[in-house]
Image (cartoon, rainbow, N blue to C red; front, side):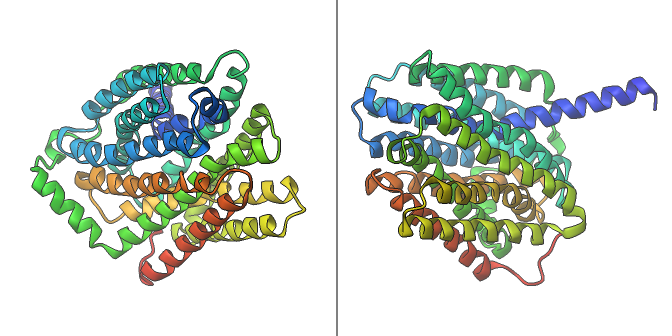
Length: 405
């Protein structure tokens, strides 16, 4: 192969990694970018903290339900067409959010925004399964998390800085602009990865049968449930930390954005370490280490908060450990859950994974604010409970003979 051909192949791979990583980051981008402005949004729309957190819940619910539609559609129609339609809808919904006159209008539009953006997440995972399986898929997911991890790391920092020159509404305009770039990038860089011969072309009844078969698979359900509970733990942090850190501990939106970014950097670091170690240590073992970190971090956080007197010096390390653990859990749990299925049903399997992740997150997000935001205790209780629940779910559903190298 000539030098020019090698250069072209490398360039295509880099473009593929970048666009898939950016598409996978749609969830974090939609949630994290406006987090520093959540208290301001609450004041401007005369909404309580719990009502403001409903904008998170609505987006998460949209991301969950949207994947149920986008995943099976991508198995039937191919990956590219549903993806482009979803990105166009996401752009329009994001711009509409900036014009919301009331908190209820914003909640409705955030639901639409999440629904439209769901296709990007589920189809990106399905494309990875089209191209890789097993440990190779885990390595690719780890590489994608290098890009995906930049979203929660940089989005709140950028959002916090932009709040100095614009209101929270401008942040949603920014999300609309991001949608335009993702749409153009997908049109230019992303080819179809599921040829017509490999599409199942079945009815919605067949899709329901596929979902039923997936739900009867103990291994798949186990990893999906554990990953969903771990995601819910992180969403409790996402929903509660702006109010806890800014209102309880007096952190500015700009400093909060830096703290949030440092925690996200932990995800990136562990995901890249995962990519280096997965061939030698194995997917299952690395997943178990990530699960243990999230569980211990949650319990320690609750202990620190209840004991009191330590303040941010005790809370911030716990949050860092909890968030960083996702760098080991996400790539390995996703690869393990999808490893037993062919590309023809990868979209449907990916959709069920996403539904559990975002549906549990949607339920948990408002719980953090229901008991008030004058203390860190509600957030800590929810996060510790979810960490322990994820660990218990894994122990109850794992199959001792299941291991993927």
